[in-house]
Length: 320
Image (cartoon, rainbow, N blue to C red; front, side):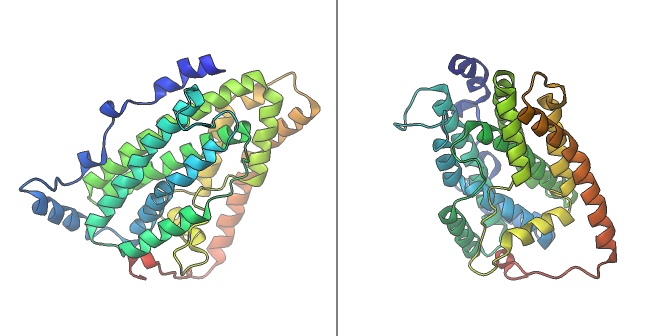
């Protein structure tokens, strides 16, 4: 697949000279108007709700754990980079992907720092804990599992950033909306690349990919920051996810939507000539969206019977 990847995947990377950089969206510290620009950021973000900042910080911390993701892809068969400068298209892609992703955490981190709304030491502590903890996403060194995971996760991340952009717009911070939107655009392009690789693998080995897809969905696609910890809250990722769901940034409905999109993109229902194991995996995958939808309905009915939600404080926003 190397020649195919060279022709079809590497062109989806953007040269650094053509990419946006964090400084394009931040005050210029060398300019006479730096302090005025800084005051404008703090004025715009003053009225943004705490819940929104919780989700934005969680998204940023997820992006900042990039060393873990680079290590994870480098430990995956096919994608691995033995020397650090391998010229295979897979190694070139992995380094280029990481380089593009690196800008996301840089930009969000600096903007949030300048907002003056956060306890940045607690944010930084959380980033250190997360990188040290690593992640357990169930892909091992299997490229089939890796491409399925990244196809799903990149789309989920794009949705999350897109929805934070919409909320920033509603709060009146158009610059923050632009930042979240441009990051979402990158994530969407990366999703397209991984989905295209998976699509090619489905053509070559439909049985193997179906079994891998079913395995990942039975395990459930966990987000890369699931081991998030700030030194205080043992259930930090759970609490962050609950806020994200409640304000509409990433919900169970979006999870189901990503699955439905990938099932359609990879023509899972129409794959034929399968082994018994492949057909079993196909049936499971195709029936899963309806099962998830029924669970959503059940949870919605249950939530109506509950009392007011439990209040949780976040160290990131000074324990509010």
